[in-house]
Length: 320
Image 1 (cartoon, rainbow, N blue to C red):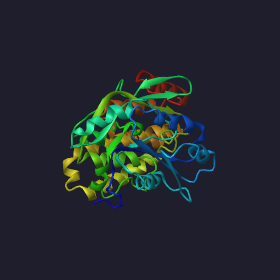
Image 2 (cartoon, one colour; image 1 turned 30 degrees about the vertical axis):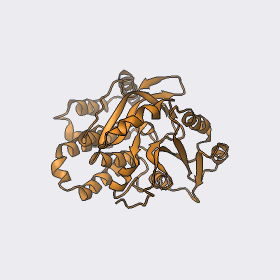
Image 3 (tube, rainbow, N blue to C red; image 1 turned 180 degrees about the horizontal axis):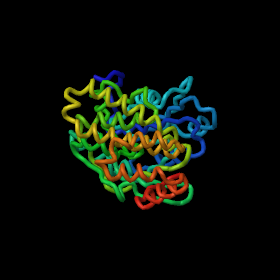
Image 4 (cartoon, one colour; image 1 turned 60 degrees about the vertical axis):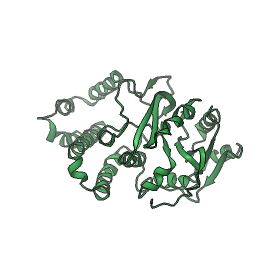
């Protein structure tokens, strides 16, 4: 049983759409309307207002009873706020939509049938990344994804866009905790990775959602939280899963190397070149990409930044 309590009398076929909001009025109407436009008719929105101070509450309360509005007394970390919303969910299935993202009309219609396999606990899809400059790119256009039993892959190559994920409600009962309330940046990656240890993943290979890329998104702010929280996540997995270190030794090494590369980029962008090089130094003899980044760090910061943006462009990555 999970650490949290959930009413097991779920409404058959109902999808509870979890929307967590903290001052999201700018894009909120568009996000909510994308749920109301679903061709799959059996859904509810569980809207958790994390003590917003803008017009978010007024916007949410303008809809009918299919949107159930809840408001916290104070702002709490995102993982804890997601758990508050989950406790109010009544559906057999649970989906997630942040208030600056969008669903395409047939999203739920195409995803729910994949749960006919009783071993499938999570269904995702492709999504479209887009920004205010009119740029857009399919998320899986140039990157891999995996289905079935794929916890190994999720550890080193996390590929689940939150706005596409739907989970089976009974998955909650298999978790000692849901979203880790300590986490503000990787709370979803941690939760969905833990689900993959015991459940299969399935996927609709077409874009069924849209992810809005903008500078105030959590994805682009406070990146250092990812480094700190990933260390805590691995420590937790060592406690939760017997022989985790032995079973996933290769994946742990890859993930730690990836975090060092991300830390190096973070420090280099700040102009802290010496600190960035310290993160890269252990890998330069055995990893050509890390070595290239190490030697690029000696370039003037404007040239380094140009080359980094060029690489992102060639990979089809959409930035704010």
